[in-house]
Image 1 (cartoon, rainbow, N blue to C red):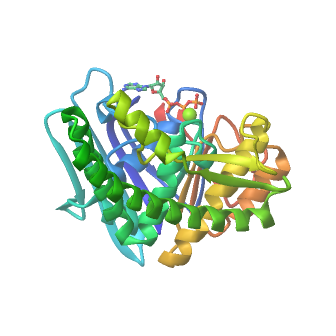
Image 2 (cartoon, rainbow, N blue to C red):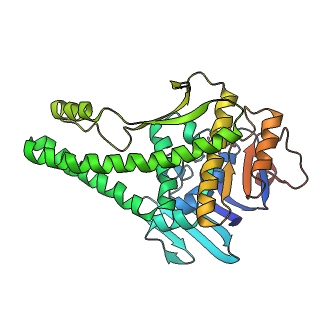
Image 3 (cartoon, rainbow, N blue to C red):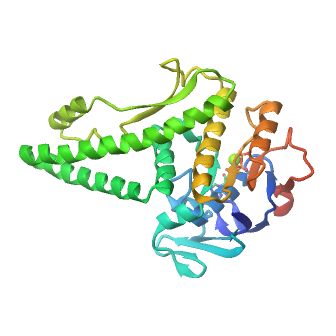
Length: 334
Ligand SMILES: Nc1ncnc2c1ncn2[C@@H]1O[C@H](COP(=O)(O)OP(=O)(O)OP(=O)(O)O)[C@@H](O)[C@H]1O
Ligand SMILES: [Mg+2]
């Protein structure tokens, strides 16, 4: 898969902007020049929303009424044009001129992977973001999984209504179904995490480090639900953290160590997906060099040598390879 071009109108700080890409790209510009915005516009053209805000309305340029993003993607030598036009009253999302009804198909056929200070993969500050990254990966590998997640959320909705009505008998029956699904989802997530851990052993210089997924005390959560009349057993109540010899070391890793682990885990997920799809994934690496030493920057660049990458940064400190297309956005804006 290859992104050839992005075209944006009234998207954050850009009024009109068009950019062509090579295989290796490095977007350079001062703080606030719009580097993350470019990556964000690409992401939004596929998934209709950004990784840094759940509200697409925030992406509309100040004092404007709508934004438009277009991307041109080559996949198996075929042209794919994505178009997303958003205004508060009208949303049009097209793939090759046809309305996109099923976002799931886009996510599975055109997966792109992002790493950004706003979305730090499996080391993100928010447990919710870590878990949804694992879920997104499983959905690509297993169609049934999406249905399971939807079913689980439907059951939770029912349960919420029952909790308000205080219907004990139905409450217990619905919980049996929920727990069965919850265990099933846990096992699927654990499978992916075990695969990542196995790959990490070979990759990371930090010894004995792994990701742990912890299932909460279900009986305790159900009791709390009963007494507080609020849902506690949700899709995000399983906690994912970084562990070393069974201790949660998330708060003890240095910034660079955490970032390294984060990018390695992105690499592992990418490999798992690529193996399944038999296609190379596009990687968006926002603020890539920040916090990494020269050796790590160069190692990662090697590791992703097969993929199309779009890197951003205020400057290129260590990557001066002649094969990188340096895009200075200040120049483009003038
Ligand atoms: N809706 C909006 N309308 C207009 N401008 C916006 C909007 N949202 C954000 N901005 C501005 O867009 C600019 C680009 O932001 P962006 O985060 O892309 O910068 P950046 O180049 O990634 O900076 P940094 O080097 O700090 O990461 C900023 O000046 C920001 O204030
Ligand atoms: Mg930025």
